[in-house]
Image (cartoon, rainbow, N blue to C red; front, side, top):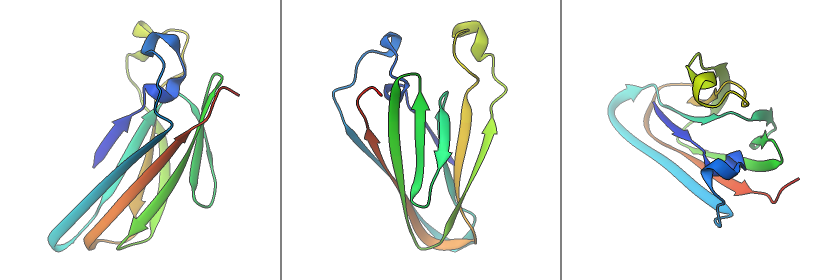
Length: 121
């Protein structure tokens, strides 16, 4: 499993402003025998799922995430991470992990996330 955190999506001055409007993340795997394959995104934002992916909303910032899978169908999962986050950033919510998992073991597959950052809401 691979996890990515999105400081830029936070839309918070403590992380600085991002000039990038689109981020592409692609995870490719090739196995010698079928295996489980997943990736994950980490955010402190609220996530709304839709048919192509999901939207992350954090404060006044919003990002849409399109998920493209090759080699297998995917499903989504989410969990709140029990981390010592409040000690460092007490005004934020707890971080959440949003998993993107292939529904069946794969020999070769890729999961691509196209993240489009919106202007402030």
